[in-house]
Length: 270
Image (cartoon, rainbow, N blue to C red; front, side, top):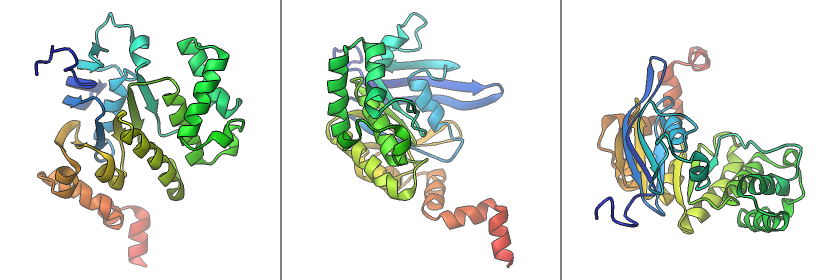
């Protein structure tokens, strides 16, 4: 179908994206499309540009060159109403960024009232519905400090969902969590995928990527090295860079030895 056919545009489209911080070119010409209802997991080593790409999608980082479209609207157009476009985008960070001085419910209602102009009753109803979705209805009147890290991250997801986004962006949403708390957060993300939410997920959770992603994108050195189904990219990667990354990820002990960390060297010498 033609790109200009009504309804034909992808939900997220990135064209020729470059991003530099001073002399450091972090993104080197990224082209990426994510269709409506598609779940795309972005994997790669630290420093490969994954999080920078994600942050460029909602202009938390200003691209040096290139174009970003969400829902057919160009975010990189100087005349765009960026606040209006961002209402289509939910973002979940590594850290939970909850307001510590108000309850869980108020964490969900305040953005609705201030950004969307919803009344108190409507905002509270939407908050309750989304806390139910993430399995935390009983924590509505709790304060963030009384919650586990996993519960706080699920509240952060509920807060993003309460804004009614068409797209959800996740930046390593489980990396700050203790291992036993990861499962509940991933279960919520699986639910969203099952419901048809368009999702772009920067993650190191290979099991999640295998089971939930429609596509997996492997980045290294600021470029996309591979883009395909989980079976292709994780199960049978074509490129040596991808194979090397996955072997290190699946064998952390080997990765630590290769990096020559002092504690590993010390252990080996004892």
